Amino acid sequence: MRTRTLTISIAVGVAVFILAACGSSGSSGSEKTIKSTKAGDMTVTLASSTGELKNGENELTLVFTDASGKTVDVGAASLKFHMVAMGSMAEMNDGATLVTTDTPGRYRAQVTLEVAGTWEAMVAYQGPHGTGQATMSVNAK
Image (cartoon, rainbow, N blue to C red; front, side, top):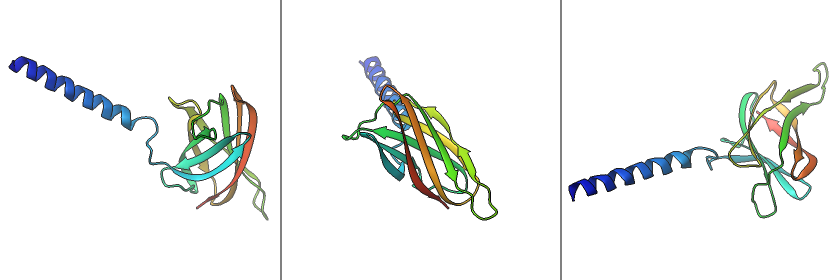
């Protein structure tokens, strides 16, 4: 009887450990929206842990969802930040590196923005949900 109790306790402990590990990977649920926009019948959302962009390195999440909020598999996606030339400052284009996640339609992105200010986040996609693009104005602090 004692062996059986020990075995059940170990099994429950392993199950709790696995559930905790799985729950902390992938999307954290603590992401805050920076900006959202429409792309056809989808919503494209750019998010980060703070809900802000900053001058320098940024870790972001790019998500495509349908009207019900369910993620949509768009296949290949890209994200680029563009700032127009101003005065003596040249035009800038900072491309993000996108990595797929376990959830189709959700991407992790890393980008280094050269300066603070207003940028155009330019999103493009091509795949099972067609081809499209969206642009949203965002501010980096």
